[in-house]
Length: 111
Length: 112
Picture 1: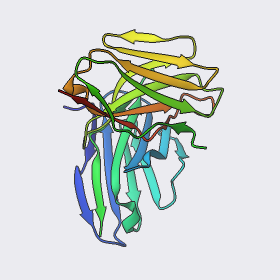
Picture 2: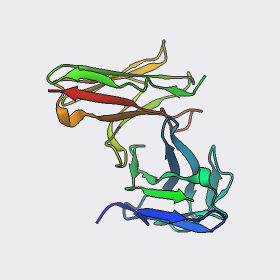
Picture 3: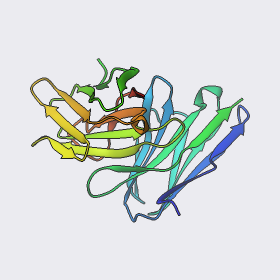
């Protein structure tokens, strides 16, 4: 099993719908992150969490919310999806060597 | 000025040659630097990381830091076709290693 698991892998949704992307990890790391990747814009930080009670906004948090249900689970929600939220979304955890481990990504399309 | 900048490429090198990838960063206080490799449609994979106290070599890969000029380099010796990917530079902007800022990546093509 992968260390960082994201579900779903692919999702097509309609404008205005609520959608949740889920992330779970088996590495025992406290720190978890959500990034989105767009062509030409690279990886941009949406939200990050240092533990269950600590949630922080990243550079592009508008239109998104998160929930840290447990140390191992960190979910990203789009309350009302819009087409410019079409992107590749990555969850990541951080270990002691400061390097991130990324999940395999969720490709989200909003039509 | 972007916080972390990379030339988007593509950088094309022949098989067996040295590929040199560069990344500039804006925060002079940054202390940790990371290189990730990303194949098309896949997630980024950590290749190397260095701290402000020195360069690092790991197999065919060498990461070098030039603090005065605020850039970090990744050298890939004996380049192989399997090295063809996008290479992402990441830096802890703002003096914290808790979150990283990524460059947009350089696409490397290793030709036969």
